[in-house]
Amino acid sequence: MRKILIISGSPRGEKSTTHQAAKFIYKAIGEGELGNDLIILKNSMNDLNSYLPEFASAEILFFLFPLYGDSLPYEMMYLLEFLHDKMDKSGAPGKKQVYALCQSGLCGHHNKIALDIIRNFAEDSGFFYAAGFPVGRGGIMNGHNLNELSRYTKNLRGGLIEFADAVKQGTEPAEKTIKKITRPSIPLPAWLYKILANMVMRESYKKRSFSKGVNIVLKRFAAIVS
Image (cartoon, rainbow, N blue to C red; front, side):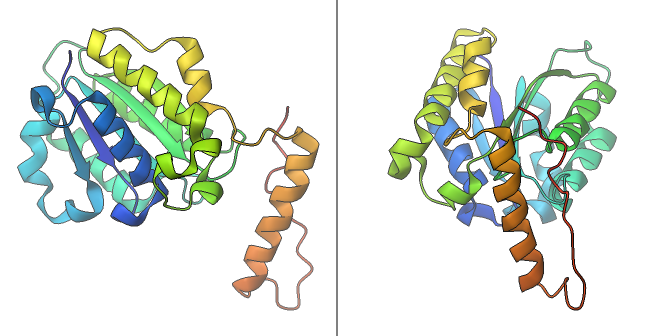
């Protein structure tokens, strides 16, 4: 079994949906086994230097974070830049593996930029970018424990358990495992999803007074295809 370090990267910390997924995978791989650890980034920002040995010794880095403005939260961007500058890159290229789970709250491919940032960080640091998981269950989960929402998180839980088993066995997760993790909780046709998503975003903008006196025509999710 390879040592895995899980980074819960939501600015909301332990109250976040992201952290619920991080806790679940941490328990699935075995809490504390072989030095496995879970870092809550919100609580660690002022003392990142003390965690450098853990980052350096981990064979797998698993970053979990929410989608903020089609990108990563500030804390995650800061961590990536910190690790890129501080970690030793003299080892064998590709030895350390990197996984990422982007908790977007919505399905579709609008989290591609965020996952590409993780990919670029990994490759530029001499690591191997193994896989990125776009997960769209934020509105349904809303910070609840995954086991409390068994109906809507069945595929996610099953996929994360299969991922943990692969890590324990020293193998890569199968394609079916990745598809299970990223499968929408409530499958919708692309055309219906776009309508509903834009309605939600339009109301969100109105609540934040972005639309006073302005007839906003949102095409935020126009690129989503089936």
